[in-house]
Image (cartoon, rainbow, N blue to C red; front, side, top):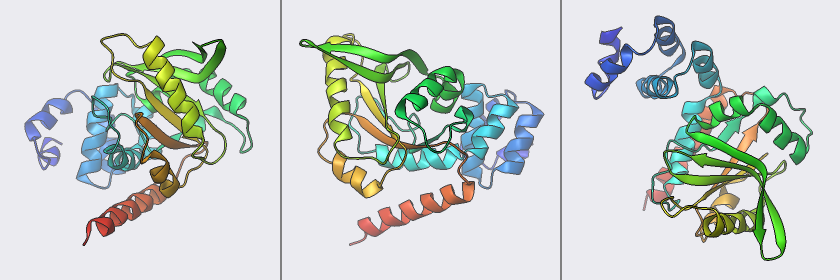
Length: 251
């Protein structure tokens, strides 16, 4: 087992992680992951998040490696005092909600709060839940953030706005307004600027790129799935995205 992982860079660090996982964890990593980079990703994630074997198996099934790689490439353009890579994803798999294909935003929000433990496992354990329909008072009007979290590592508030249809550019205006209100009225002096996550049922990446190109607020646009995405689909999407980047960089 140890010789297997010594092919990784920084093998001393990897070796120190080996003893923190069970034989069953390592068996899953060896049998389920196709590349060394993927195995190392899940090895570090399982230790950091203290995944049980069942949780590790689910995360591999959900293609969290591919989803994180997609998001990291896009998040490089988001301005924030701390790097957002590795924290947010391009898509979230919410199969544990057992929602029907046709559902309302209220159905989605209610199910997420009811299954909050599973949702935070999907997000990452540094997220702390602050409330749903979190009230913001601006002037004489009340506004409500769908879901509000605090991220311990990033030291900032994270506002989730939920949409059950395809991304539209006008959705950003509402979310940016919430971020401004959070930063002015709720953020503590030592905390970083708030981050917005627009969670949509679907999105067109080119439309998202145009919409975010002049945005000054740290905002992530992600899509959600109510059933597991086949890993082959995720890998193909990741390869296509990398090919698009290479094509843009070529003179």
